Image (tube, rainbow over all chains, first blue to last red; front, side, top):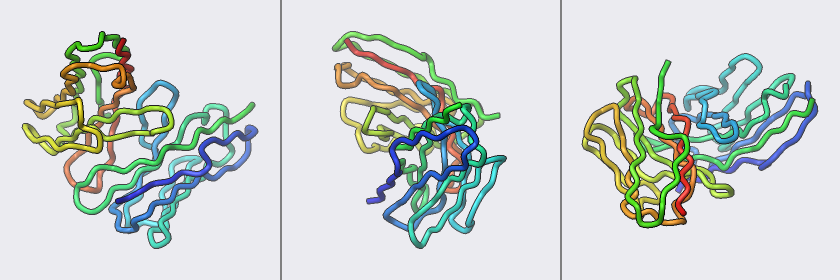
Length: 112
Length: 113
């Protein structure tokens, strides 16, 4: 059974710092990996989707990489801002049309 | 822009009541999902539906049922609410197939007293 782990569970950084969030998964047979952002008490917003054939995706200050063979993904946030404070979740989709399997998230605080 | 809406942001119910949570999406998505989210446990899949009138059990279906009579609407039903069903409930939808983005609604915070 696929398991997704995100370390650390919480992270606090000063504004302007570049940072990396980590995601690992146990079964490398995935179709894609998706990173989400969740603000307190709200739903999830999709940030980036990486297909299994891709190595990375970029959107603005965000860059997500995927190393399928080692079961790892990273989300890189450049020049962090207080508005980036949120919980970041990664999720993987296995073969076929199976539901996403989620990690428990990393709670990020960016201090002004 | 994809929009997934949920009928209530906050809901307070009594133990034993029948509770309906409604989810509507406007992008003709085939697949729809219901999750609950609890501190320390993360997101857990309750039920999902690949298309109209179809339903599949997720990881924690006990105490819940679902209905998908129309493509755009997916309802979660708590037949007899209990206090351990107090949680944040999140609905999501996506196009059929493994490659597409999943979109979430804003969530319903349900409290069962």
